[in-house]
Length: 271
Image (cartoon, rainbow, N blue to C red; front, side, top):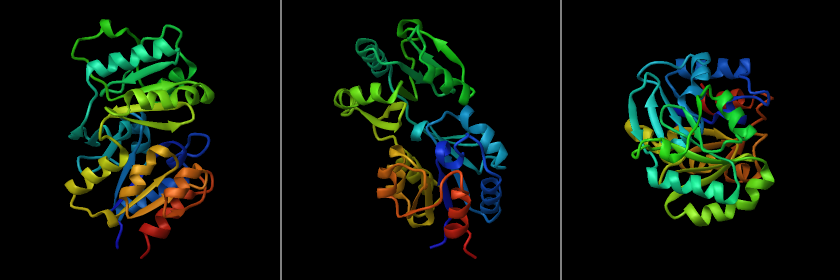
């Protein structure tokens, strides 16, 4: 089946280990775009954190799309919202209280790419997160914000062992009502129930009248597993986690060895 949509994770997939776009990746993505294939960046980042790469890849306009916050928001690159699933204020308060009670750094992202934390001693991961995503960073308690304040996702952050120690408890506490996923060593993320990359791509594909077997997905981590489950061709990066490789149909080269470009040329640009 011809590939009509390529969904690509950003961190450690689209970007190399230095957080950069390889020239080979840019060339391959532009070739796919020129062939009429929809190339959709599918990321845990907010739009502000994806925009520099969309620009560099030549992806623009109301007929090109991006999936952000691990699937909480689907929109055209011009800003037309296809779907948005936010977390209510009560859950935001509950997550903040959990972080304070268990001494785990916590922050949230709103739908406008701004990061909020109630932590006065702001964790270094939150600072790097704000810098990488070109996002504003505000220190606010829940009572400082409107009663109807909603978030796109919440994040417990910090060192790997610190999150390892609370991951099961977070899933027990919130897992029945929210989607909880260990997106990376330093990120334990919570989204609206039913939100994940796979569901978002499925919804976008339906909007575009594209079938699952016409979708190729590239990723490297646990939050890419729902994406792999939907896509007809699921490609794990050579640098990806063992669980990502286990759930993929195939494995490409690493993000430092032209993995994205090789996958696009092998499975999408076959003519």
